[in-house]
Length: 97
Image 1 (cartoon, rainbow, N blue to C red):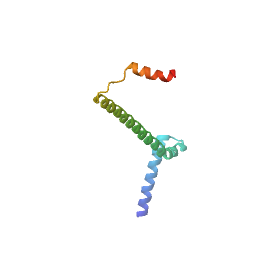
Image 2 (cartoon, rainbow, N blue to C red):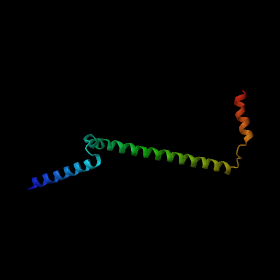
Image 3 (cartoon, rainbow, N blue to C red):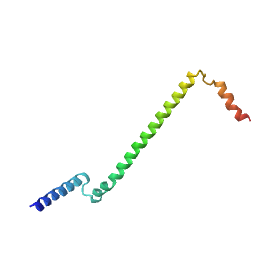
């Protein structure tokens, strides 16, 4: 009795899978197997892209915060920002020599 029940369950599972594949992919048999093989690869690429984007965004935000903190610390110490003439004369020294 148990063996018959197991066969029925397996047959129903197989039939559901075949119907699902037929609905999604029609009569092209090679298309039925392709997503099963590519699904883990595609999911891995998507997860890697999301992780990479998160790392880039985190790095950008941390860098921006560090720049703002350095600028605020500079103003707290009373250092005046460099004027345009100081930047121009400093930059032109390398060109003239």
